Length: 217
Image (cartoon, rainbow, N blue to C red; front, side, top):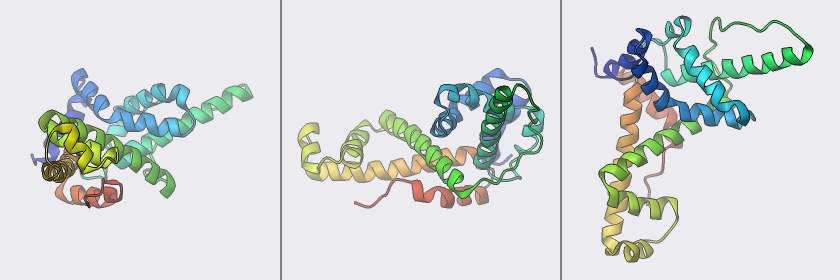
């Protein structure tokens, strides 16, 4: 088994075999961007419920048949199921307002999404990966995290951070540089967790690169 297929796909296989812990691990890892995407579609009040439905559907037999490491990007599959669940919800709501009507089954999943929706989902996906990477940076290198957070995300000067953290400006610059390097590596690690192959990994990096934090000073 390759290094790529020993992470996410092991979790998927475990969940397919009825291991609840694998299902919980999977949902905890990928639920936040789905919830935010649904919320941005104006469905805040039902976002949590619809997100749960997304992951339940991902683990139904017909969807898992598509969750194969040789058949396209995992992120695209999640978006496709999310779009379907949203459409199913809107159709169901419309049918109720009309006093009945047929609501279609999941059936075949159309993985293709309009460019605007794909871009929206990509931003939510990268935002989630960034939060996971930042949390790891805070755990493993708190001084890098403090300096990087102040300069990159709060817009504070090196001098201000040096005074606050009782370090020299040169030390803060080094912390920010090293923090950025670590952060990018952690983002890459997160993508590697769900990539099915080296090719898929490289394509995913290229696809999401425009949403990554800038490494320029």
